[in-house]
Amino acid sequence: MKTMLCLIATSLLAAPVAAQDMSTFTTGPVFEDFGPHAYMEQTEPLPADLALRHSFDVADAAEDGRFNRGFESAARFINMHAANGVNTDRIDVAVVVHGRAVQDLLTDEAWAARELDGDANPGGEQLRAMLDAGVRFIVCGQSAAGQGMANDDLIPGAEMALSAMTAHALLQQRGYTVNPF
Image (cartoon, rainbow, N blue to C red; front, side, top):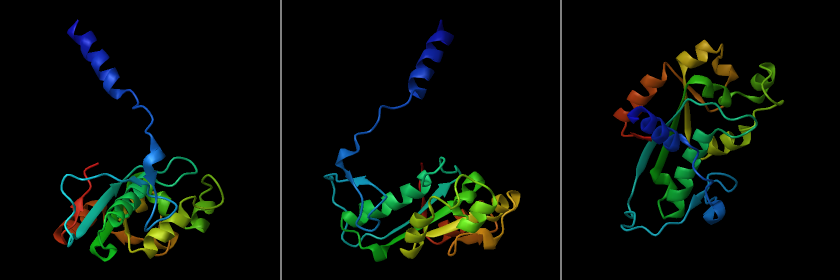
């Protein structure tokens, strides 16, 4: 009986969450077409001199034909803080990319040569906007090597590191916190 109750509880917890109401979400002010966030009255307002150095760990590849969800989270982080008064010059974001997600940083030419879905990287436009805004994309060299990728295959501006572990260690030494989810 305990086993049955545990199985039922586990399946309920694993069930998909109901769709979110996105009607209160907006994009901008940094990325006008992506990075949705919602206004929230805060119990304690953000300090006027707030500086953020934050890194994201992304290993899951984008779903077919979409922008990588982990990259979108980094854009959301920037948009929501900028919309709430944090000076964008005081927001430093790095995205450490490993596993299958490294393919989401391919140039259009490398994307097409690998015969992935479509003729061009579907997230290329958003990636270039994020790079132009100062977001760092740091690729795990071990994942890239495992997938037969070289520096020339990466969208211009993406950086190659020895490994994702090394990139995170260096970022932490430089004061970056790691996104916990």
